[in-house]
Length: 281
Image (cartoon, rainbow, N blue to C red; front, side, top):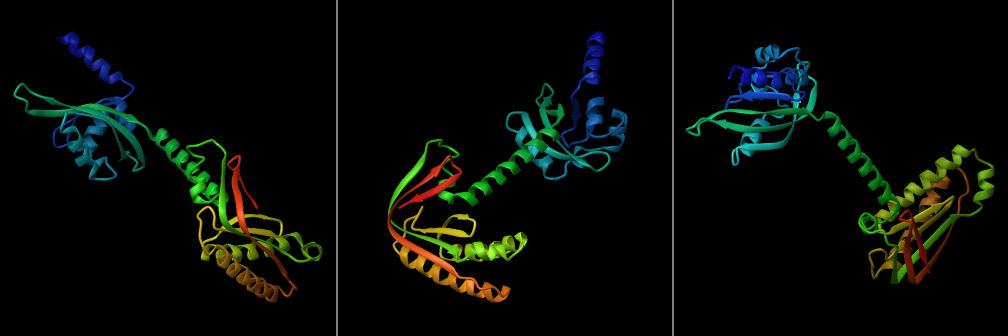
C-alpha cells in the first residue's frame, strides 16, 4: 500500500497538468505543483494557504455554479472552459476536466480533476474570429449581403438574370483637366467627400452600389432584391446626386458638373471570382 501511495504521489507531483481536489463547497483539499504554476504560485503549499476556495479563481463568480450544475447529472465534466485569476490578478483561460468522488454510501466526498492552461488557444481563436469578421465586413463592402453569404458555402459561379433593373453611371465632367490643377491629396479628399455623400444617398434609397472607378460611380436599382419602383428610385438618386455636387462645388470654390446616364431593362448580374461584381445590360 505504501509503494502504491508513493507511486500515486509521484505521478501527481510530477504531472505536467494541474491536478486538484476540492470539497463539495469548493474548498481546496490538495493541489500539485503544476496547478500552482498555472495559477502563478511558487508551490502547492502557497496556493492552498492563499487560495482557500476555488470560487476565488473565477472571473465570473457564477461559473462555479455552472461547474456544479454541469457535473451534477453524470458525475463527470469535460472541457469546462473558464476564465480565472492568477496570483498577480492577471487572467488566463483554463480547461477543467473533473469527476465526483463518492464513498460506499454514495455520499459526495470531493471533486477531483485536471486543469490545463488554454490561454494561447483561446487567444488564437479570438484572433481567428476577428479576422473572419474583418473578411466578412470586407466582403459586405464588395458584395450585397444576400450574395456575400453564398460564396461561404458554394464555390460555383454566381450569375442571375433580372427582368426589371435600372443602372446609373455617373462621372465628373472635365475631371482630367480639374485634376491637373489640384494636388493629388486634394483630389483624393474631394472624391472621398463626394462619394461618401453618394453612399449615404444610396443607403437612403435602398439601392446597390456596384463600384467606383476613378471619378466614375455606378449604382443599380432592382438587384439583388427586385423592386417595382427601380426606375423612380434611381431617378431620385440622380437628382440628389446633382444637388450634392452643386453643394460641394460651392464649398470648395471649384466648378463641378456631374454627367449621369440611366438605363432600365433586363440585366445579367454576376460575381467573378467572388471578388468582383459586374452588371451586363
